[in-house]
Length: 225
Figure: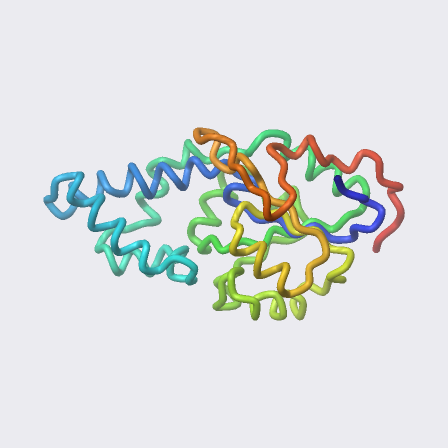
């Protein structure tokens, strides 16, 4: 599927790509409605309906991912509630071996995530993921989500890469479309971002279920410093 000899840099999404999206799905659809209902004296079904209507309004914006925004909007401490279920933060299958393979073959690995810094901190504390890659970049530092094509120019200024020799792996199709429009040469999506859901049927981009399908074992290992 991939010719690793023409890839210098791998840009990696975090949630749903390196980490199981089930943590986030469970938080927004189950845990938050329960705690929000308790906090505001609502029936859980009523709380879930209110949250769904409000959250969907921010889809595709940086607010959608922002812990501080939702804490202020909803009147609850989102970061604290996320920590209540941090035991659910888990790697997706074969991720650690894949990242080890990138490092072995001197292919630069950079996490590029829309996750807010407070969510990022929880996940790094739980997994040590930041120690397995060369760099972690948070879209909130650029004040633009990855869905916005302007994000990629800011990224390239901060983390120089050759578009034609870069692979982006992301479960978010809107992000992949933005990267495609920007000109990133190789794009790959994740077909099973949430371990508790069915495999997705995606035809727009090449996809993998797990990273053992593309481990860079066959690369030349050439020096790419």
